[in-house]
Length: 193
Image (tube, rainbow, N blue to C red; front, top):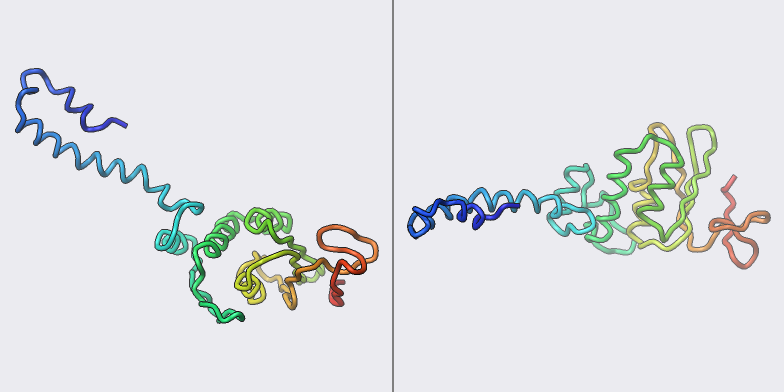
């Protein structure tokens, strides 16, 4: 970027010893220069990884995601999301805006935003699915999941979210992965079908 001093050096030698002219020219050049500096810095002010407070609120307005929840969290905390949680919700919303409605994309988006928790969608093949999440999430994120406000959902598909979030994997005889474990390592889930 060319700065004001670079332009001032382009003045012919005849006016280099004219302090009033150089001062006037510098003040005139400083206005578009400051605008240019501000315009170049603007994308960084709304970078989801760096934005805070009002900047995140502005990104939320653009994405169509409010910071204020439509319910009261079960742990009694404020229904206004803190910056860290709101940032994750906005990232998931931004990714969802490019979503083509496939289940594999939901997993991909979820793993980008919430790597600390694994998502399992049990598709019943009748326009409904049961959601299971194994891992560590804050209570407010768990409440958002239980109120169907965070997991991307295709139009017309019903999600069953009762007890969706568990700390331990789900009990299974013949599977051993992040979601399913055997005795003494899992919780019993009677609705998984």
